[in-house]
Image 1 (cartoon, rainbow, N blue to C red):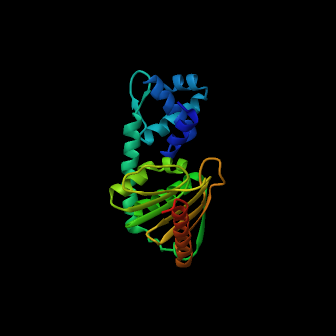
Image 2: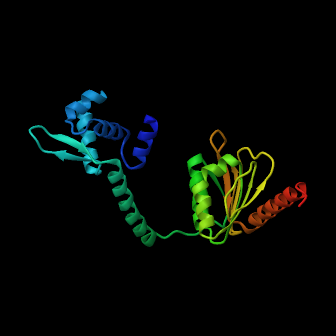
Image 3: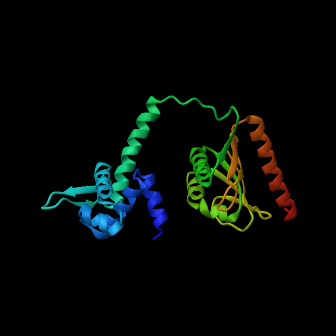
Length: 234
């Protein structure tokens, strides 16, 4: 198991790095005292008890009152499920009670970082009502397989331009030259995301709902598809 991934994912669910380390030890060893946790993890007893108290407060562990206080872990599925359910409820409340001005069509927004770009891609696909055009490498398509399959399943028109054969029933696929890290996405002829995306790339994309930019990008994709057809003699 990749320890760095375990810690990173647990911090995404609200645990501190030290709490994540203690939680992992609890899962490995079962019911334990603060002393045992400190001994096995190498952290101080005061930090061990502080972390255990934090785990109890956050719903990742239970306190068992015996001759000595011991702690047992809440299994990851239950702990994470509880956090997700609570956050879904909080999200609904915030969506109703916090106003959000629609600024997406007013300018050009730079999105940096692989995770942030992936989030934007997934959000754009989820909100697409009619059609999605995506130009990227085959490796990129493989990483978005679930989202692409859902688009087809929900009846959205899906057009893919990529650099190696890719089969997805219900999608139109055009194969062209190597794409590298370049990605271009347009949804419903309203929003565009374009730039570099993928492990090892600069991971910087431009996102916009500006009508002129969207039309320019749409025309560029249409021209690319026509060139592919010409090369294939269609």
